[in-house]
Length: 241
Image (cartoon, rainbow, N blue to C red; front, side):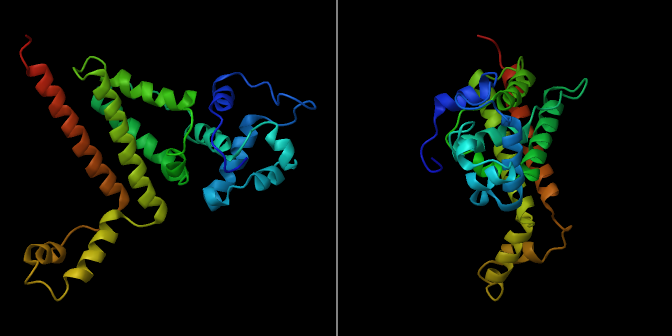
């Protein structure tokens, strides 16, 4: 059960249909929310590799077979955990334009991924998106409505922003900023080879402010939004045929 393919029909029921407890057997004693939160606690501590159905069952004081009456397998459990961990997005800042809304949206998404490092891997597991996940996507599309971007481009913006938030949250979870790891590695490689890589050597020896993950996040997010803004400006300035 743990290693098989995801049961998409059952997962759809778990995420989108009002839960009624297990489909057979005694009166339900657990809720899907309690099961998801038990899994989250384990994954937050030990990652998805440490997430075993037996451990989840023991933390809930039930047998593994009893747990399977609610959730058919690990993949479905992880999808439920992701839905619970990201939660509903907060409302957009009052009076914010599309850029302000997307800036806040991405920071909120970054915070969710940083709090739950396992969520990065969970997003690439075959699954059915839940209501919370679609509500996050709805916020991006709503913010970009009327900007001149096509529907496909609006969805692409969401993918781009999620990728940025997820990537930088990974570095934060590892405790190493991308710049710090990158510059340390490059310094070792360039040392003694300065004549071959003079520009790199100069850049690596120049005084710079101490980099951290939040700085990298801010820089990258600003540049992404700059690019989107340039596209929107070009669209609105283009003559209508």
